[in-house]
Length: 468
Image (tube, rainbow, N blue to C red; front, side, top):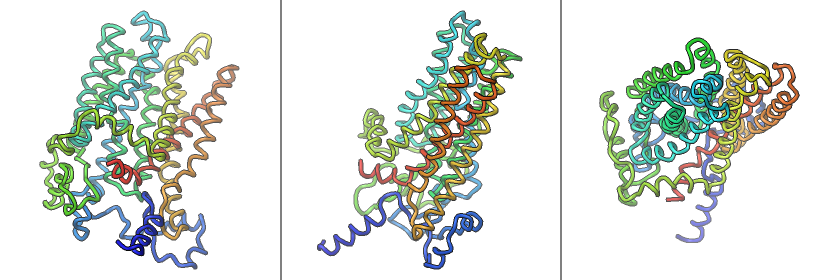
């Protein structure tokens, strides 16, 4: 390659770095001069057809998009997948704090301290962490569908085990397994959404996912409080077992495999198992429904890849600053919600606190539920509108950083909410004050976590290719 050709390539790389996309073309100086936030919000110009979610199946054939490509699935099929996975995420998220208002009753059942009983929430989160490592390897090797289905089956067994636990140690072990089984609903759904929706649609769908995920964390203590007060804490887990069975049925019949290898060429190197899987689907006619039901479709990674190397791959991805930042923000955002769930019973139901009953403590979660809904809407739909507006003003070029503006209200709401909540509890103000701050914390955390999972996806594949 001569020097002139190299300069051209370098200019192209600089003008369109990984993660950027052209969303609008034919933007004239007149249209840019007339651009305004109000006009854009009311008009919402359509994206160019070439930047629509439908994309070529691989660079090997850019003229014939495959109907089996998840990005080209019909909208009802993608919506069914979204809400099926989202409903499962609602259930898995609900498991962490659903016993929060019943911790005193669990304490009296097993004759252990209230502080010890709070470990049932922490050990569930520990199970999530270990489960994410194990399931991520299986999702890489066998695909997403078997992980969702097998995880849901494990959730049924572990929930029934927790409900019937004869001892405190048995309950802790059941909660550990329950967390591991629930992990796919917490960490894998964002991956599947990114595989069936393009960046232009992804913000709103990730907002829906975060709404269901955070809604489970904010609504479950309210629902659990009613069941605990009327039937006892064990019945909460029996109801979870039934709900897990319903989710298992929906996942088995509606959660199709979303894996699709992109940006490869069969003319440059021998195809990997995942690329062979994709190439076969690209060349085949649309799959019949019955052909999508098998759990295992073969290996998607080379047989030489070890479990340890695959388990360590997510940590290697953290060498990318955007992914490291997103992981940190997401962890801190949802971490505060878990801490609040562990302390709510002690702060509001104890004699030294406000002396609430379990149902009264559960009603406090109406405030964070409202904060969850508002944070998901702002972080999802408003983030999409903002991204389009910034792309339109930027000569039609979309940059993922345009979504980071949402972090300003997220940080302000979280900091003020945490400070106000701690102060109001310390001085024992009227219960309305910590309740309002409770909702502000959820608004900030959900807005921050939604922004965190939306921002890095356009560059994830580029990072993975660089590591490979």
